[in-house]
Image 1 (cartoon, protein in one colour):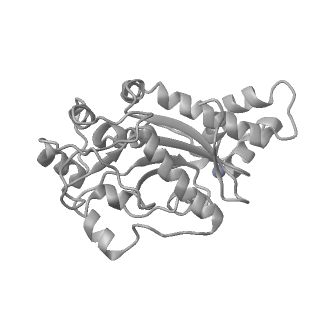
Image 2 (tube, protein in one colour):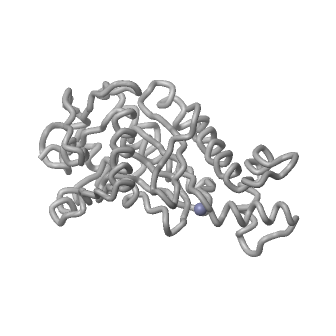
Image 3 (cartoon, protein in one colour):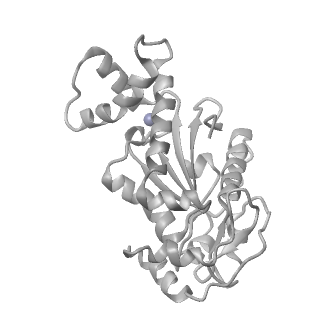
Length: 271
Ligand SMILES: [Zn+2]
């Protein structure tokens, strides 16, 4: 079975696959998770990728053997479409639970090439594999409170696009975020949270300042959540390791908002 077919739970299968002569080295990288310098992963991949932001073509880093040997990378637009279609199933209560079988587990044991990296909050109600109706090998997931990124978390976000050609990063804020709410309250009260929690407050503060100053509004928390998500998207787009891929259309970075009540993911406007 081709990995492109495995990735696409909708049944749509891409075409225009290309063969990658440097497969053995890349397969090794995927399997071991070893990070190498000098852009070996993404830049060697670049020569074989023909997908673009607006294109529908599915490109491949390898041939047509099993997922451990073959790895189809969708275009950024197609990766985003797959996520949103999975979310539509979640909203409608029509889950397919793709890629959660023993066969999938065994097929992915030899290697991985997820279609997206999701950067979101630790909130127990915001589980990316569930709300995008995805499974094993589909997503890289980086989660911190209020999706605050420090150096380690940013490196974790860089890993997929840089080493494996992951075509999409989705930064996902969510409604009633406890971390953002606590940060907003601490800022308003001029109080300091204990332990390392104050670090989260300081990371959210710029979004609060832009969204709620000079007069705090009634929906200040939600406005701060949106502003913070936009700021995170901006920071990642300016990330030196990601920026060139974004510029060339190999990588798309978008922000979204998850509504707890409906389950719907909405992309932020103006992206
Ligand atoms: Zn949250």
